[in-house]
Amino acid sequence: MKNRFIKTIEENSIEAVSLIVAVAIWQLIADRIVQNKFLLPSFYDVVNSFTTIVESGLIFTDTLTSLVHFSIGIIAAFAIGIPLGIAMGWFRKANRAIDPVIEILRPIPPLAWIPFAIIWFGLARQAAGFVVFVGMVFPIIINTYTGFKNVPKVYVEAAKVLGCTRNLDLIRYIAIPSAMPSIVAGIRIAMGVGWMCLVAAEMFGVSDSGLGYQIWHNYYLHRMDFVLVYMLLLGFVGLLIDRFFRYYVDAKLLRWTSGTVV
Image 1 (cartoon, one colour):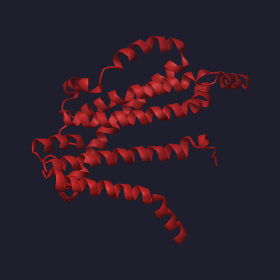
Image 2 (image 1 turned 45 degrees about the vertical axis):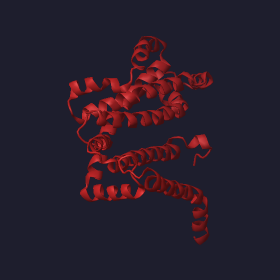
Image 3 (image 1 turned 90 degrees about the vertical axis):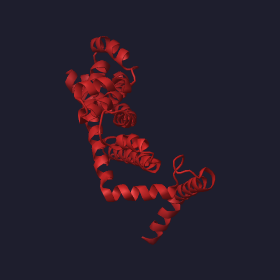
Image 4 (image 1 turned 180 degrees about the vertical axis):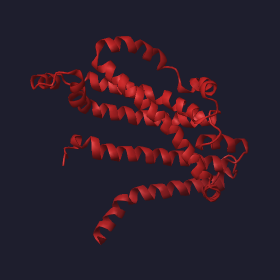
């Protein structure tokens, strides 16, 4: 147990040292060079502001609000993006019918949909979720389509020889497992894009609460230490979401890619 603890410390020492050095440089620049809390709050200022929002309970309310917005968008993106990608990748006629529409809508920046989000949903959770959905759905569609398009034909032919002839069965037992790494990659990309769209949506008026909203609100109040707190919170929450997703997917869905099936 002792040896394992020492080994863990040694393995993580480089990361810990790099973070400590970065914080020390930040504090030094803020105190000795910039000397202006509005231009660059120090690490000490940010810690004090973080303590304030924890004691007030705002951190929990705003984080939960942003996670609700994000959940609405990701659920809608899954429900629409994956079936569309499957249809486009598996059925040629579906691809020819859907692809022109996708290619016209895809280059439109997600933030351009904010006016319609406000008109359609008002300042409600669905509005922020809609902007997140727009940012997430296209990476999911494209990667799902690519994964299905690249399913080896030998797998399909072998399944047909063994009696798996229906499209539904071929999709379920052959195409989805083969395309899963591509689908997962698309979901990870989409989560990053969706998280950025969430912040922008909350900042530009789609929501009246959340982490992104608090950044803009505190900027108007010239409380840049609180702005930096919420920026760091966005980074940490996004990191936790990505790590949780990677851990679950690697441990459950993609064990075979690492050669560990048991």
